[in-house]
Image (tube, rainbow, N blue to C red):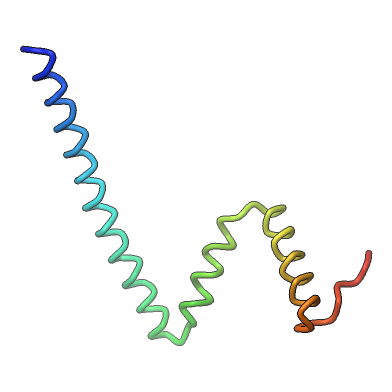
Length: 86
């Protein structure tokens, strides 16, 4: 077996593994879409559900920093009262 043949076999194996993972990823994405549709059918706002999922992935400190910046920016734009000093 030549070096070229080994490299081709490795390349083919990598490509086939990636293709299988892509198929699984598509199936999971379809399942998630169905769950959101079910939640929407039960009266839940899917946009808010997606936001909660994103927030739950964050570290607590990262989330607090992001919320503080959001409040600060909104206050600067007159959308809410200025944040209180602690």
